[in-house]
Amino acid sequence: MKEHWKIFSKGLIEENPIFILALSLCPALAVTTTVVNGLTMGLTVTFVITTNNVVVSLVRHWVNPKVRVPVYITSIATIVTVAQLVLQAYFPVLYKAMGIYLALVVVFAIILARAEVFASKNGVLKSFCDGFGMGCGFTLAMLVISVIRELIGAGTILGIPVFGESYSPMLMMVLPPGAFILIGYLVAGTKTLLAKREAARREQERLAKTSLVQEREVLN
Amino acid sequence: MADYLALFVGAVIINNFVLTKFLGLCIFFGISKNLSASVGMGMAVTSVMTMSSILAWVVYFFVLQPLGLTFLTTIVFVVLTASFVQLLELVIKKQAPALYNMWGIYLLLIATNCIVLAVPILNVENSYSFLKSIVFAIGSGIGFALALILMASLREKLAYADVPKPLQGIGIAFILAGMLSLAFLGFSGML
Image (cartoon, rainbow over all chains, first blue to last red):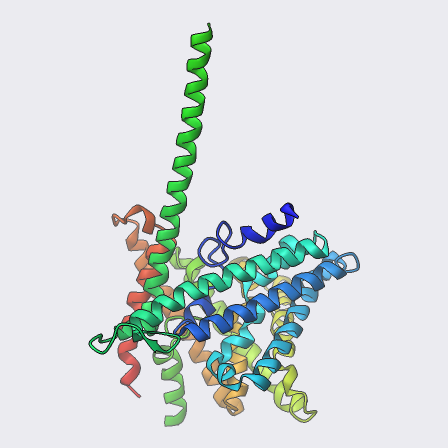
């Protein structure tokens, strides 16, 4: 159980697909103009990546390694088509808002990468945890980006005004340039945080070592 | 004629795929560290995109639409473009080894890329005519190459700049792309 939790949770922060691995950025920038759109894309990707991981894990013993990539791509494309049809039938407004980016979920590097790196070598339950964790990490990143963009760019969250009447929105944030610049700073922020954590860990190790040496000296 | 020109200019600068539609970002940030590689990549993407658009257009309008299978577009196009790039790689390797040495590595990167898939899908979604879809594909490819070369030139200059440590690498590249995108936004009122 603990092992599965570990596989699930690493996708959230440590190996976050967007902030750390910097994979599949196209959607993160394109559809995060509002929180609803960002969330829809996040959930769609979670569904696709989890299902695909399970499928790939199930067939992993029968697929010849030489043709594995075409098999994975076909599997991903089928699952994406299912997601497309469901959205089109039940949420036509969201389907329209996603536009071409929904079909492009097929070529997101993160989905193929998880199939290749994890699901093709591990059991079904583990692959499910891995895919679900990565999907949640992706959704989390989409949520962070879209909340910031909608808040600054339109002054609302989920369409509800937050700053009151006097706020004049900074339109650039919902336009393409704002997305690029925001991601630049978010990546820098994550990098700083991780570097700080790493430095703190090293410092602790060093302290532990020196205290060990001192102890020995005292004993001698 | 004016129609085609508008479509072409629109695809190159106004609706630039990288800077206003965020497509092909993986290649864009990966390759733009090096100017000569960017030129090669730009040409490779333009030619692959044009050829796969032609192929996809024919398959869509002569196979998928008459048979009423348009809901399979995504699957068919992905398999089509990916296998086409693989085939192209084999042919070039056999017939023109010199060209393969120059372009071979880029072809593998292109195989499953959003920009190569997006152009054929947009072509059939907007139901462009055969000629129009070729113009659109060439325009998009040139627009991609333009953005890539601009970015590579900027990043080469960046080597001499004193960038704050956390922003070094991908961070500053994103902010630069934002500035470029802001400049390209100025074209949006042109047509």
